[in-house]
Length: 250
Length: 388
Image (cartoon, rainbow over all chains, first blue to last red; front, side, top):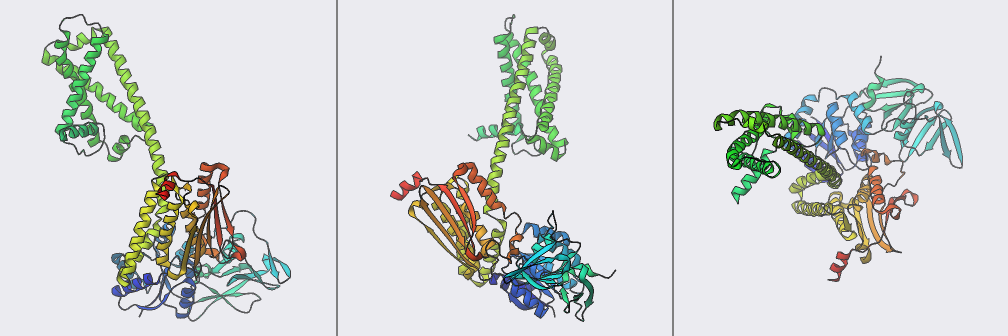
């Protein structure tokens, strides 16, 4: 049985897509319909559906951001009304997408593809590339960020980025996990990624940016999810599906 | 009447290079023959007026040979053009027929000139055989007529060149105007909005037909308002607010409780003249960058007032604000920052330093506010309308 999740901020559009999908694929089980990106991300992590139909423009997190945070084996199908840049990228990378308004013929073709592809893994490297391209985290020219100024109550701390193990998004803030302790800053992960040396700092998840100098190794769990071990840090960091290919053994 | 239009269309069709003509061959041949006769008589009249004709009965004797030669020239010219349409590759024909660049024009002119020379050769070969005397020798033996003829040909070429240049310029201007209008239209009927609305109507037709109907009606009014706005350079705030209302209602049907809006303008402000399609991009910004990324949505307030001879229009939203940490969603639409820059350059072109557009953050990062300021000018037509 294939399980699917549908995310769209306009509920009747999600319902319509569900009905069309069920007509073409009666064995498909739609386990959740999310109304925003945050709900979609949480439910995908919790329920691990085989397929997620993600609208690109959603409040909270965009469909692209949700895709960037998927750790399990969920295969993403993007749904959009029109997004010139995204459509070009999807087409180029042979990623799955559905256009609104839904055309039955077109959807039937996507369903046929999903049905026979459910055994083969989705193209991870292509997905990561497309996501990176569309999220426009192009590295900025000019001087790289070398120090982080983090405030802690009345005092502020001057941190050398070389001493930072990783950055992690936490609701409205970004946690700086440094050798000297943990600090909060307001700069979002995507902005940091653009300002830091890409040779040293890698985004491995929608909400995580790691310093490769502090990477100790990886671990694959029984659900075949990938985790990073950082030197001097007890807990492991999850790697989302889209970034797994960065850590293939040599 | 129909005969006249057929001839007119035949005339136009003669000068166009394209693979298929929608005018009958007979009509085109007739038009070509008429051209030849007019040309022959014109040339003869020219010689009669400016040349020294020393023989009696010259006019009647040489009319038929002249017409014959001109028929040969004109039919060869158009024959060669028609042959070119068939023989040359289609893309080349398309390029030559559209007066776009100077090379296409030169190619077409050279082709025509070669065809005219060929036609003259044929004419001067065939016609003497038919009339039984040496037209060419006679023509050659009249140096004055020959010179006049050469001057005439140069004159025709010059006129043709000037006409062609002006047509080129006109087409360029037309192209620029069309492009500017297209850009505006494209911004107006943004594909994402268009397809999303259609998708909504598609699904609502099954689940909520009355709402589908309402959406279709609102969308039609919005399109109608946009298109009529596009046809004019200056508009009134009244018309702009009307369109803003249609746009926001359309989005409200989609976003349901996630969008609330209010339009608040004084009677005096509504009569103000302002450039068309200025308000719309500000609303789009507020929705796409302010409210859409926010989970619970929010509200948009459009305020317009006149103070000290200046019109002030404010678009206020309580969305995610300008520097929110979670605002990565705003990167989704590349070129979105273009909208403000575009508006500013339009304002500067029309008002110089007299107008301004500012984007301000609201307190505590709760939303943003766009402030548009223009010199206040009352619309004459609107005020008389309001009086009536």
